[in-house]
Length: 319
Image (tube, rainbow, N blue to C red; front, side):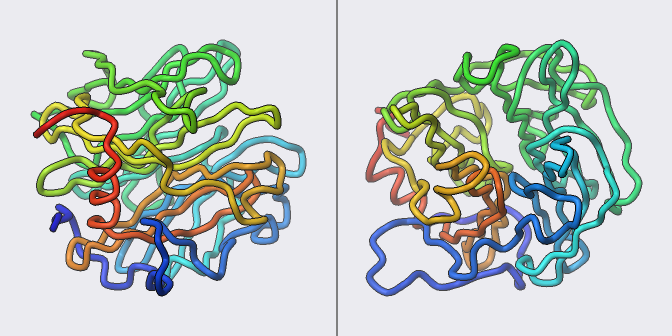
């Protein structure tokens, strides 16, 4: 059995796996949990980040407005399912991730500049006042995701370098920093390998630390005759050298199957951005964007995911 290294979250949102359900990840039967109706000026609310906060939950949410601007707003919840979103813009951009490091909460997101997309970094202790740091990648990158602690004394950030277009450059890399300002020592992590992810891969939620691995949930993209399909996969990274992929599932864990995942502003999208992990029970709640229109919730356990990865491993490593 695997052990999650981290905090206990006794009020983690949860629903037991349906009886005889054969897959490692299952959906909340109340999905979607957030829709455009949560804010009067929203065209859609989707790829968003959530963390435990003060015994409850806080988050940063991507809102595409009725003018089709892309902004981030804060939100709060008692139970992780029913959310109250603030209508005040925090930052321009999209696809936020959040993690807690040494008592502060750090936000990474995709910023839009005249020269392409870059990774913004900001910190807060209350989700009201924010300190913005220098951009981590300039130019050009998406899917900036911090590890939830320093590794060998340094902050570590997963990224997907790209160009000014939407699809080219499909590999995951990482960067190191001693101060959240100067980033360097890039390392290649992984590239698309199987058909379901062959167009590109990108880091998803904050990696989950276990006793043996970093568990990285990620999205992979297939290009078919009907366009892109975004699904969720999983890989296990080395604890001290997280650019080393020790094990990797050959197939997706969650793909667009339900109506709210298949129909929307961008059809056929499951895009994971946050995962709450309870160290006591091993339970994991995954928040994901559905069809670039709404926020949905899925559940798994650390053993369900790791067992699946090891049983369907395509990395070819022995550890």
